[in-house]
Image (cartoon, rainbow, N blue to C red; front, side, top):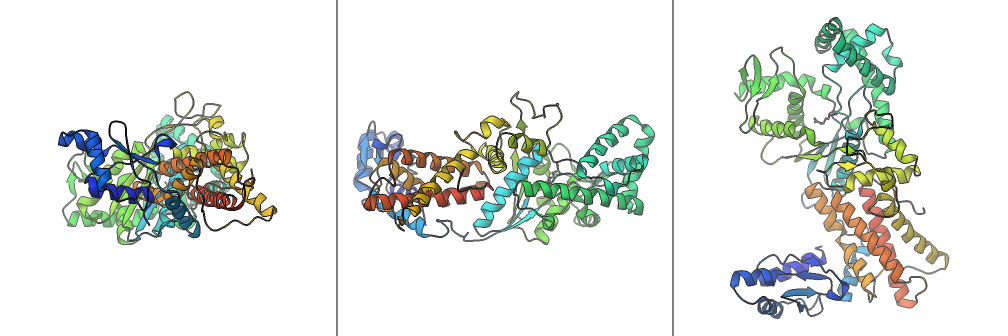
Length: 545
Ligand code: ARG
């Protein structure tokens, strides 16, 4: 089912032969939509705009949808949908258990790489954004029938483990007794030690080699570090109501055995060459080649990502691979994608997209820090929000603040603004949703049944709401295509605002007969759109607040 604006737009286009660029009317007295297509065409044709507008109006066939279109001002065309058209669309949505959401024509296998915290380190605000955005994309693509495979590419490998293991041995600690917090502290001590003590640094480097070679003692301690980190990650996912489990883990180390195969394949097909002792792939448009294998035989972060693409295409059969990682890694992913295409790991028909997001800033415009000046951990953010609001509301506040700002922008972590029940906030949407429930509850208590159709839409506020609600599916599809959750946030906020205007201007339970029934049905439709929309954002929608 296409939405009403889409149908109307197509009709106008068939006459005007260009996109009418329908815009919502600026005032209710102008109807519902406006097009300036005549002004644009008039310029090209060298004719008076009002004449062109009149010609379009005369040849338009929209009588089944709209009142007769109006010619306004210098040549705008205003459209007012018929109340019965609006009522039919809103009723159709209400009758649909999926409130208009369709299954994708061509369901895809979509790998989403998100969260990806690092072992023996606390999750920080960057991981917060990745986790929240990735979770929403997972929910949105899944509800449309795509097969989503989350991949939690945790940082469980690399040179830092040489330092960590060596520090543990130095301090004589039993790694099995650490928890994520104490491991993170150990990490700090190990890095400092590495910088200050040449002898320790040498031992740490040897320790990395031992880890890669499979030395038993080293591997055991490394395993323990992973084992103690996972419950910490999982606790955070649970606290945040995030759909990630141990089944979704595919850490860097899981690609170790694939790395020599990557090397062999790239050498065999001639895409990688030795340069200065390192095995490299050169791709046009990049300053430096990608180093596949360093001159000392070691592998880096990029090679692992190459192996990950290889597995995601060959074994997971991805049609689309999505990376939710902060924008400082944009150059890295550009190169990983270009190299993957060149070496044949990423065929033409598989897309790879980096959903790059900005940083979380403090009110002072600098990267967000805790009160004592430390880099903010994810936990500290959650705690800060929970100081101001109940957990479900605090979480809604954080998630919504994160999702509603454009991805490429840094966003300011301002707890007081985020938890407010007014403005463009998560709690405001939750509150609007709870208010729909309140009306429906009262109706039930008074024994008033909610009809299954919306039939009367005389008031502008009713019409605005009925116009917005059936657009839900179109917006969700848009998020699936563009991977921009803020569009859904903006839409839901519009719905909440329209509901609140409706609630002020159109008495529900105090009205009577068919009007009351139709308004109750509109409340129910709003409740369902808000609940489902919030669910797709990973935000709880309580019945009462
Ligand atoms: N662990 C990395 C970090 O904390 C993010 C990994 C992102 N995913 C990937 N496939 N490289 O920065």
